[in-house]
Image (cartoon, rainbow, N blue to C red; front, side, top):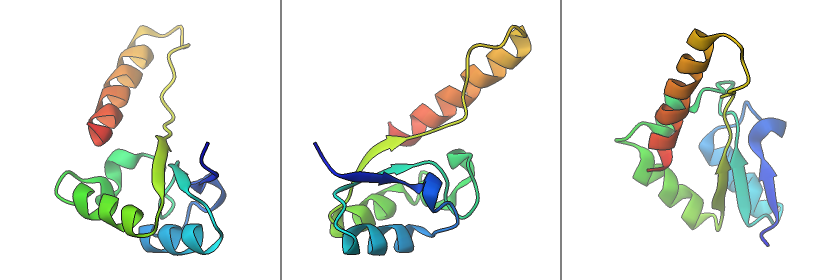
Length: 98
């Protein structure tokens, strides 16, 4: 099992700060929840399709494995439109790791 931390505790950090401090503090993995105050990872430039490989390379160089990408997607709403929107959001987030 990898010793990991979640960016929920440091949501204002940049990718570079996450990599620097994660490695410096002895972690092997990181769970992404927020970056630069943005919790919708589909809006985070580092995870745009054109930037993903560079972002992953930063994590590799720091010796950090991405162990989870967390979202706010939920499927327990009684409102059908809300469930449909959450499904679309979930699919968009799945595409980040695809």
